[in-house]
Length: 505
Image: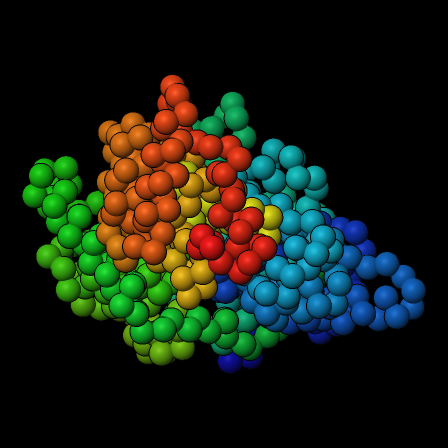
């Protein structure tokens, strides 16, 4: 399919140019809002052209770096090439690319880790400065100049509204029949003029099928024909399956106790093998008529939709493995009626998460014995990916699970520690912790009670005696609401840094 077939607005066709020509329109030092959310819907051609432009400028002894804002992570051909070309000064709000991560931890990129629900509104409020250029992937343009969104909506609506200039990257590879799958809500406003969002069910449609842009802002249209990053999901291992089984059993118990309705509440699931294992468990579990209200729709939710276990799925992005994406393309008419893609300021909206009663499931790096959660940092200092949307859902969800294997690095690291080396979610936001060892329900428990349950049910047997010893000695120190030995609280992390293992000598 040609560019002319996808761009039915003549005014934009007259601005078609190469990615190299468009990259030259982005000067050094500007704030650039790019599309993209979890390896989907990111620009494919422009970042590589910008990287080459940066290398040419550097070779001439001239500075060239831009500040990059997105919805969430992109891919190697976006974050990776820009980092490798030393073309990024500042990055927000999330990243998974290893080259960009290395640059962040080396201090070469100033990374701002943000709750995903905060990004659009902070940009609207002016907290982040002006947006000079938006680079947005779309599937096409209607005859009226409306934009057909791509495989991720993310922050695109906001970027198009607040940017001074816009470059459209029209991707002709994703199926054009995705048109109509999106639901773009334009009712947001800056306080004190905000109105309630009229949404009471996860499958409600409250907006338009298209993105809007002021035609005068569009300075370039670039064609590309390339798919999103392939997400490789391994077959769930034994640990992932055990974690999933604990969660499924717990949900069944809550339903029997009358604390969950028989039709279940909407499901939010983070990305990864454990998340897919949980979704696979739902596929064979006793639950019917499910709804998804999540950030990223991955393979497991497609399986639920295809099997008729899930009625509708609402997300801001579709991020699939290659086989699942082929199924999506081959059966686009089926999925278009069952998938709703929204801006992330809706998919991650804390008030909607609370109103809809979302059941949240997110991964973590480590938890401490009182339920504080570290989602972002390795050994307290090195950024992994970012907090993403986990905080949006954890604090506001009806039920909130944090999951991880109990150990990492072949047992050299305990993922249950005396004190987290970095805290993203405090004990007040943590309801349920699950490892392959078991499930700790922390609701209604005081700190000492929480510690005993977490150690008993979630810690690996190799580390459980060490944690029990730490807690017992901490409690003997005298009156403390949350017992700690400050000289030892982070000693496990220091021991790993010094020796390569958290285990006691």
